[in-house]
Length: 407
Image: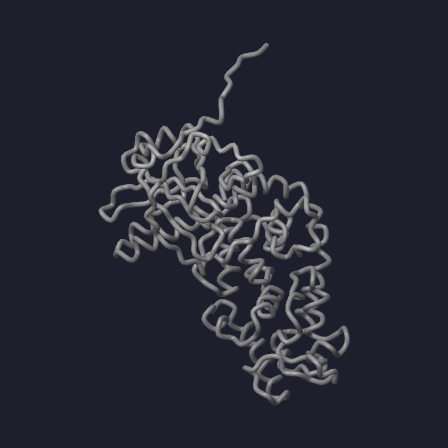
C-alpha cells in the first residue's frame, strides 16, 4: 500500500478514533479483572467446572470468549478450540465433558491437566516463539490468551482468514503460515509507521477493521444484491502459499477495432483508479517482489535480494514500481501490470511518465501478471523496448491534460 493511501485511511480513522477509545476503558477494565481473577500462578488450580464452556457464565472459557469478545472475536470456531468443554457433539445429544483435541488423549482428567499446563506454558514463555508455536493450544484460543494477558505485545486479531486479509490489503510480504508470525508482521508494520507507532495495539486493530472491514469472502452470495455482485472482489489466497510460473508469450495481430477496446459491457481488468483494481495492482507488486527476491536468493545473491525495493509505496514519480537487480548487480527497473484474467486478450495502462521512462531507460521491464488472484499466477517478463516496438500492439491515447489559467 502506498504511503499516501495509508495516510488517507489514517486521517479518516482520526475522525473516529475518539469514539473507539471511548469504549476502551470498559473493555480494558474487563480484561484486567479477568487476569486478576485468573493469575498465571493460579491457573493450574482451576477445576473443570471453573474452566469449561457449558457450565455457566462465570467460567474461564466463557468469560474469555464472551465477556471479552470486544477485545477480539474467537466465535468463529467451535468449542473444541478450548481443548475440553461440556456439551453435545454431532448426533450425540448427551451433555458431558468432551475432549476437543486429540493431542490431549482420551482421559478427560489427564487432558484437563495438559490443557492447564499448556496455558501456563504460553504465559510463562511469551517471548519464545519456538515454544509458543509448539504449544498444543488451538491457534485462535492461543492468540486470545496471549493478547488478554499481554495486550501490548500481541495483536488482538486471531482468525487466520482476517490476518491474511489485512496482510494482503497492506501489501506485506509474508513467508509463514503461523498466526503468531502473521500477528507479529502486522505489529511490526504498525511500529514502523510514524503515525501508528504511537497507537495502542487495540487502536491499531480498530483502525484495520474501520478502514478495510472484514474479508469479502464472509459476504454470503445469497445475501448480496445483484447491484453489488460485480463490485465484490474475491479475497486473494495467503501470499505465503503462492507459487508462480514464468511464461514466454508471443503477441498476435490485433485488428484496429480490437485495439480500440470498444466492446460494450466488457470489463477491463486494469485500472489504477478504482479501489477494486488498485487491489489487483498491489497484489501483482507483491507477487513480483517475492519472485525477484526468490530469483536472487536462489542464485546466491542474498545481498542483492535484500535491496529489492518497492519504490511505488512511497514515490509515484519515478515511472516504475520495483527496483531489482541483475545477477551482476545492474539495476532492473520493473513496471508491474496485473489482471485477474487468464493469458489472452488484455490491455495495460501507462501514464505519460511511465511511457517516457520506459522509452528512455535501457534496463526497464514490464512484468505482466496474469491470474493475479489465483494460487498460481503467471508472470510475463518483457523488456520495454521489445514491448513498445511490437507492431502487434496498438497504442491508444485515452487521457488528455488540459492546462488553463482562469480569472
